Length: 283
Picture 1 (cartoon, rainbow, N blue to C red):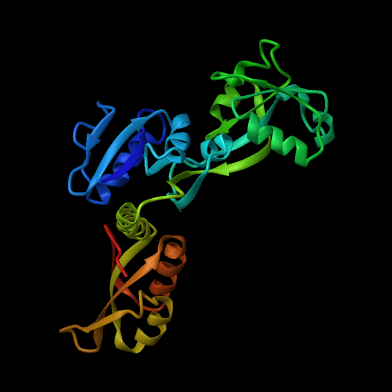
Picture 2 (picture 1 turned 90 degrees about the horizontal axis):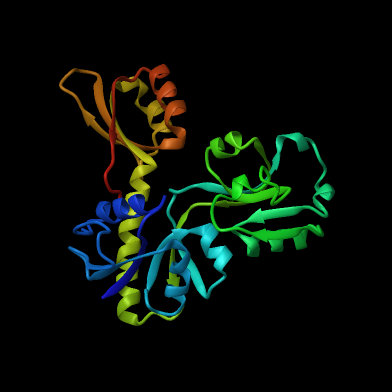
């Protein structure tokens, strides 16, 4: 059985369970228990604190884990990232009081910086030859400058609203993070096979999210031009319509190219364009 560690509560918990569900893996009763047998897949789900997941994976208590990349780098355990998952995106940044606008990097020298990420921060300070004092705080880091505990902070930033409400601004980004799937380095052949099956499902779900299925009608004289905009997986599918001189064109386009492609299709004479979400993409 593949032992999968998932954050029990926090910003990645819901999205991780949702991804497992999209992969056809049921987790009955959610995270109400510490350990539960998954449905439709030979796996056991362990619900843990996110800070503990890298160590549990390193020690073999769990085989793989869903966790933030920031936690993986901070804990610095013997694990490897096997897949980036695309959700839970954030930044680890140094933030300063708004009264310290437009300072140079060298002016961080001598400052006291409050953080829950001392390993990453100290590594960055060393790389940039900055001599600052690291003050380790667990939780509510952003309040430290206001109560005189620190001159600056180094913390996770998502929307920036917490910084704004505490009269701070984002000064320097040390790390861009997202949810990742980590693995221990010594999986048995049986568990490695189960991991490969899970990765196949995850990649199929991810690929579907970044693509759209497109159906449209077009005059035959414009088909060649339209096909140039719609490469599809191999090439677009073209089906003659009952209406003489017209065809239906089916294809897949990338989310990132979506609006440019649609505008080009309309300019080329496409009509009745339908955009359909894709649940899975298997190649």
